[in-house]
Length: 337
Image 1: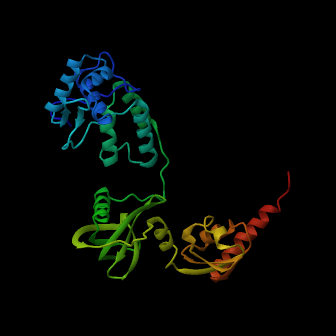
Image 2: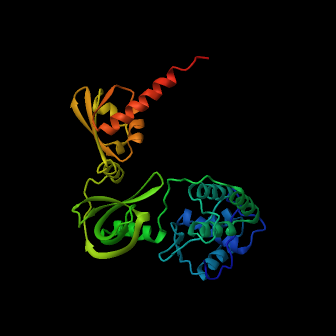
Image 3: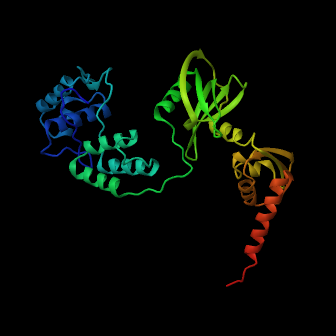
């Protein structure tokens, strides 16, 4: 928050300053204009604000008194610009932007109405900073909306996630405390390559030094993070999303192999990568090699393939596929309207 500006007042929906706007509101609008048009002149700033040039200079003075480094350059190409050292400029939202942000938070985060939750707390601050008429609309949406929870989502601790994202960015090895789904706990050192969000779950894609292998850890199961001084270099051709999906397709309980009567290029964009790896057998045939802990899910995914295929390995998957196939046949034999 600015040191000398007591509150944050935002412009009207279209970004214009009202004729009855306070000096604080005009000063903040002046800051937005300087940020958006570096080198703006005093007369141009006054015209945008609808005030005299002397008043525009006064608003610049208010910003400087508040600790915002507004620089001025003399000459034909001079004007005002924001200098170095500005840490956190005030946020300027239109009503549409503010309501859109509230709706997006409610849609993606189901603790948004909880003031003790970090997202709920941040959303409350934004609502309190809005003009009264806009805040009333935003608060009504926030109070009356009842989003359906995503049962598969598993949101990790924000501090843990931030530490891992920072370690990825700085290329620093980390020591993780981890608890598996089965309840086993261990500590391991990894090179954190990337944080990937997939279907409501957050994963750390990394290289495990204890396993000497690529691993994907659920961040909501990480119990502690210690950033080490050891640097690392991630793979030059790293594609985090593709690599994660490929990783999630191996190492499960049931190994599967499927032969599909279609060229690999025709299937690459039709099948989820989580099913496994596609290998061309010849110009017209492809082999799918993967694994699963849920043959029912795997068989249902295969049923969506629009060409003939054969499950050549995994008796459990073959049995489930027969049941799925019989159900599809029975559905097609019902009485016609």
